[in-house]
Length: 462
Image (cartoon, rainbow, N blue to C red; front, side):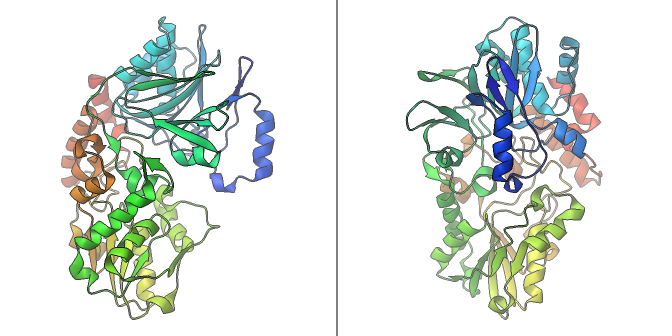
């Protein structure tokens, strides 16, 4: 989406970025005039999951009042939206809810409608929405701005071009690098930043001592060549691999080689190789032209996608005791398929090293693991998980070592999915109550924060 001479120009499509051809992108640019623009390549983790609903919920989101028009793009997830939906319907006759980006957009609009300036409107969003939200927006006068939720759960950085004529916001530093921009700073939790011709204007809207940056970014979500807190993600992942070796030397001494689950397992595999001195055998290869992502596929599609995507070089693994290095074990599907392929290729023993600690709880902040049911670690210990996925053993990096490698204080990270301790109150309440029901046999059919009971809780909490 772009802005030019008081107008917004928008183009949306539902597909994966690697499928976009240069000619197609150039055609889009011709339809998107202007010198200011925002984009989004994230699928929503709220609202309906059918294709029609997803395309309607594709960002950026645009909203209008008689006073102002704005467009926003955001990364994150708003936990409970029902009361907020009612509030928006009462204030905007044209409000249509597709997903939580509409809530963020219209909550900002409501602030302007009530006579607030940008600072006041952003403050009202920060004070009234629970969840994770890193937001980039454009007002109809060309104001280009960005802000983070008070916990700073999702990343958002700022940078400038070499001639300082252009400014940019991005979820990760790698996109600045790819466009020859220099990285200036990571937005602080609760901070609003406005891009001007003179540079960035930074304003701390809400002071919150309890920061909670998502630890899963370091293990899986972020690109390895992105940088957080002056550290490249790949370097931290290599430390993860070294840590898990030192914590499991008995298994390391039993093995002949290291393999990775490509590609997020590659960097920790290097760490395992360096610390263990075992050969890192590149006997698992990812099919670069299979672009579907298993993590976001339906249950029926996931096994087929994994089977097509990962190839095992059988002669390299026959008769060997193998360590498979993976970034995490969420559902266990990917690992199970790979282990089955290794067994059929003649592998003697297979041990899984997961550099992210055991995932025991759902995420309410934008990662698509929103029920206990789908988490293999929610009910099972390491030995049971090994049996489920067909491994001879499963070893997780400890939480303490994960935090040590990241280099941030534990209290400044969101580790909710591995500790059960959530940084926001409604998420904690929903997690605790639904875990109790799950362990008693309750069948989860929806995202926890979108069940009727939890929507009612949100009404009473907001």
